[in-house]
Length: 438
Ligand code: ZN
Image (tube, rainbow, N blue to C red; front, side, top):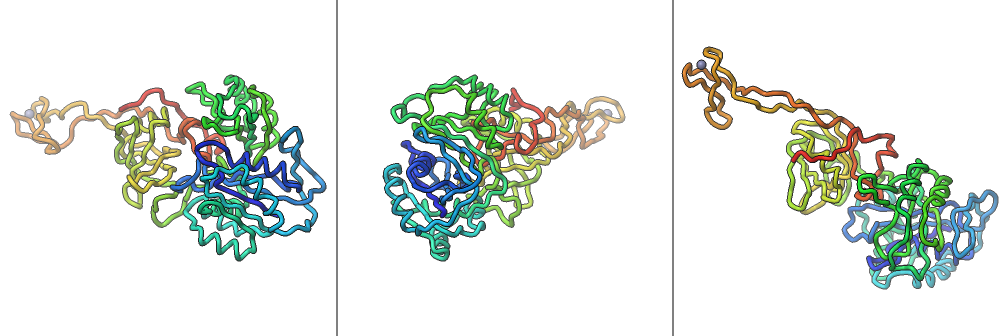
């Protein structure tokens, strides 16, 4: 039996993944496969914090089982296979609802689904890349005979249905450790350099440590029950990773399978650029400029017209790389297209090829007398005062380019949940930039 829910949290605390641990603990059935934390289109304007939905499959497990966590001192296992269970959707929903009511934020627009059938994977791909309307989801849920329940305006049903529809291609895992209830809302206690050590030793993990600020990225800044989350490619390595991280006492932990770090949200083939989705565009740099607030805009000429690409202040040194681009450079840019102002919020940049950067060093020399010509006016060329000879071209030198072709990305703390880190693409940023050119 498939269960999914979404939109149970608010900015005030709680967390949909914590609710998942409560469900896993209290439902009298076995987990079949991994519980999943599915992030959906980050451009959706009404998203909760990380726009993450939870999916689980429950049954009567048998055969091979894997340890995936511990809740209230009890080991949690996930089974590969399930026996048939004689329970209908509404019975399971009845068991679920009190747990959800106890752990959801009253202002949230929660949606809960119980179903024997999954929606088509098409719904996942739409939900992670585009905007899905609630009515479309309700039609699908009715068609597959799902049982569903909503709180508030029930918008969470959209995310819940999309998460249930997911058949992961690129998958990653997150080991989420939770705090003891009495510590919720207080400052988290941890040894930051234990995270650095973990990051170096367990190389299948990602986005743990920010070298340039010497800061760990696994601890949330919100007052939620999560102590930390370690992301990685290998389920087994995450146990080793968690053993290396030194913190206050962990209350419980669960490993979720996720679509984080997959770039599943990026549209690569499209006919037009419609806001509220993320795209990979390609084209030539037209200009680069700083705007107030420490942000930076560069304009890229594409087959869809010129696109303003913005890199915000929190991207720190990633902005520096952009300043070393020149008009004429060929780039690929991945980012989310915002509506107003219409701009692509840059998540990653691929410098495909570099143009020659020419810098004017002086006016041309007269071919007759050898003296320096003078400018006739802006863009009007040059003329020798004595001989009346003219020339249109100044003398240029070719600058050394201080940037190399390759992929560039913001530091870990400025990355999106869904953005695929270069590490997972087997790419390495060719240079890092201390200085900005402008
Ligand atoms: Zn002359």
